[in-house]
Length: 510
Image 1 (spheres, rainbow, N blue to C red):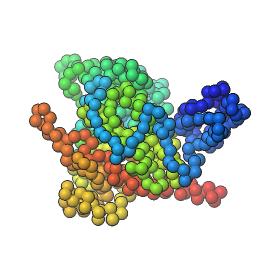
Image 2 (image 1 turned 90 degrees about the vertical axis):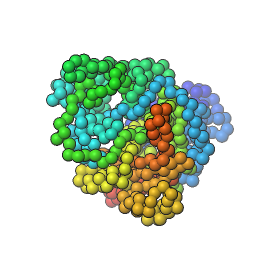
Image 3 (image 1 turned 135 degrees about the vertical axis):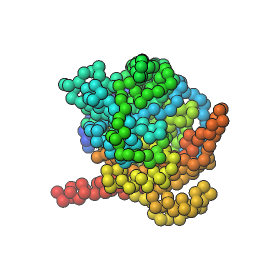
Image 4 (image 1 turned 180 degrees about the horizontal axis):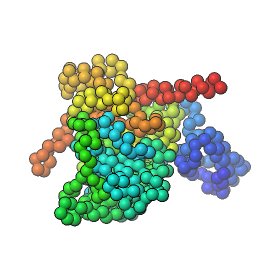
């Protein structure tokens, strides 16, 4: 039970995100205009309430999930006085170069898995990413095993813990690893991303600046000595702050030229450890998307300690369907090479938002999907689809034929007839903005829970020249698939219906 003294309930925000699902919550409020009353929420699903009272009329408070379907969709962000969504059409992109510290690029993504050995091999086989380095018992690490997959600039690290009773704490390659935190993560979230790592100019300074501007510290800076053949190498500094939920933003910096297989404590893997010739054309991480219960709070938190600027935003009116929707904001660093979108659910729609479904199954905020950038999406998809039924990844259902019949009118000046035909054969979605074109496709959830998935993309256009005359592609070229969201939502809605059909039937039979 939660009690509020007189005069304190008005305009009060109460965060219930840590309350177990399906609990019964009793609120006792005492206001001079009303007799003391209980507010009871049964079969509770965690989220944030904003409670308001006024002398007239009496307050009407209900769970967002229980709001009538005919009511306008609402979100937690609408209660924030500082954070207002303007929608895709009214959003004006401005890069104020406001980073609080230099952020260079995505460095790696670390997954926590109950069985890192087999999960890493599945991702290696399904994405065409060889296993290139390891830290485990064979390298002297008795705390955790970690296996690194690499394709181009993309680094995926899969980690699992050993028995704490057998661990020598000083042997961990990842100094922030905690058996307690690992076990909590895997039980609460299943297979998922623990860390989004970015390379920064100085991980020590980045940590101090972040914490000074409101970031929650997770792991203080640790200095790791690198070793090379014939002597001692440079120093790597690693630090961590909270990003959202149990996901951390990990800072990595080097005091030298960043040579070496990965990080201190890792050793190269034998080439025979991966299938020969694995390379499907995936080259780097384009963006990492998180789901949060309250977008306004999450965006303001990350903006405040990183200085990242708003790169794009979408509301339910922009990207929803008649049955469900979401709100989304994309944050970016100065160079717009590190893109961090975040989504929140909307309430009052016919169906539960897919974001709310994620939050329930993930038991809170977390990383929803990773967009992997390919240099040739057609080759990537041909290879991935060959392995869909052989230990690889399955994809969401393709859009109807009418989608591809209209495609020539939309992107016929960018894609040839043969490429459009190949898009239809492989189920690739296509969208464009005022700067370029985006090709994209989404896998089904990659684990047991309907939570995390992978996106494969290729961006076309937006080529720029740097100060040295080298060509590069502008970040976010072609957008984030606004024109495809409705098709994606329909696929997810149909997929979620298959997940619930048997449980509904069983309940009815009982």
